Each structure stands twice: as C-alpha cells, then as structure tokens.
Image (cartoon, rainbow, N blue to C red; front, side, top):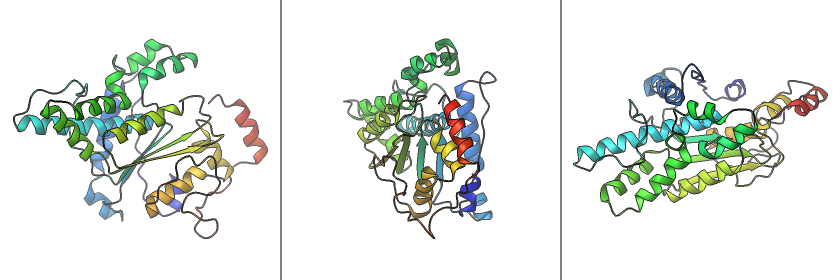
Length: 290
C-alpha cells in the first residue's frame, strides 16, 4: 500500500473479520461494506478518480473479492429477472444474497487466489488444515463459495434452453468489471497455479472479452507480495502500477521477466526500496513454507 501511494495511487486497504470469529459469508459482507463506503463522492473529495477504481486481492483476499463481485452481480441479475416475471432463481444462486448492487469498477485483480475451494481441500489438508475446518470456514458449502464453480455454472446457464437462466447469466457477465486480471507464481506451493488458469478459461467461457493472465517463473505464494518487495525487485508492483496508471495489461506468461510490460527501467520505474540485506532475505526464504 505504501509503495502504491508513493507512486501516486490513492490506496484504500480494508480488512475483514477472520475465522473462527466468522465464516466466509461474513467475510464477504465485510468486503461489501468496505466497497459501499468508498463512494464516488468520497473519491472526488480525496482526489481520486471514480472512473478508475481497481479492486485487488491476494490469496484469500483474491477469493473473497471475486466472491463479493459474483455475489452482488448474481443477486442483482436474479432480482432483475424476477421483476420482469422470470422464473425462480437458478441453481447457482449464491448462498447469501448481497445487500447492495455491485460497486462500479474499472478492473479486478486477483493474485494467487484459491478460487476452487473443493479442489483446495486436499491441498490445505496436507498443509495441516483439516478438511472439516475448511468446510466450516466455507459455511459447509464449498461449491457455492468457490468463484470458479459459480462461473462454470453461469457458463452452463448461458447456453441453457431456459431463456431466464440464459438472461441471468448474460446479465452477470455484463455487471462484472470490464477488465479481469490474474497474477500467480508458477512455483506456488500453497495455491496451485492451475487455480488461476482454470478461472481465466471459465471467465472467457462466460463471454468476458478482457481476461488477462500473468505467471511468474520461480515465484512462490509469497514472493510477489513479500520477498520481492523487501528485496527492492518488485515485478508485481511494476505490473500493478502499469495497469492502474497506464491501463496496460501484463503479457501472458511473463515467466519472471524483470521488466514489467509497459514500464521501462529509469524515470518511469516505480519507487521500490530494498528493505533488508540480501543475506537476511535468502535465509528467510529457506524457512518460508509457502
């Protein structure tokens, strides 16, 4: 957040309650509350641009932020179809309807997100998090709280012979941010990189025209958001600044290139100071389980 701010980006960093205090539904409620607080008027008062709002989430934040978007868009679409005399909500209707319509966004960015919680159960079980714990965290319904599953169901509905189901799915696609971006380290041992690949394919199947992917070679789950920023060689930050400030997406399969797409070294390079000596960082990486 500090680096983004120092490079001229207005940053809002919301938090959410955690398990076991609450489960996934309440976490998404917190995301929704934070987005509803950031009104166009507030952005104008503090010097922001209401037409260039980017929602970014990393790991659980990527999962929750996309779940928020899908929940609000699906709720809005179902209510609209019902108001027009349509049939009851389709099978992919969310477990808990959103309280407000979706926030107008320029783009969404998901970094290393676990978008399919059913597929994540064995992965997290191996990490010491029991399946029952994750299932409870997901409100005992992993599929309905998995963005990838919801998008796949929407894709099926889009080609349905039921015009109301097809209309709902098309409306959800139109309500989502016009630009969707997925970033992931290719050596992520906590959240498999396939999570982002499968979601990207599903979003394209739903008809979204701008779905961009960037994969970083030799990067773990925490490298893009911890080790790289500390080292001062923050490739993800370069890509995010390029995207937010210039509207340019990173190339697919960046494969660890040190230069971000559209950001040249020199005067335009972001301010990313080294925070720790290299030897300390290398020792920390050896102990990092992610």
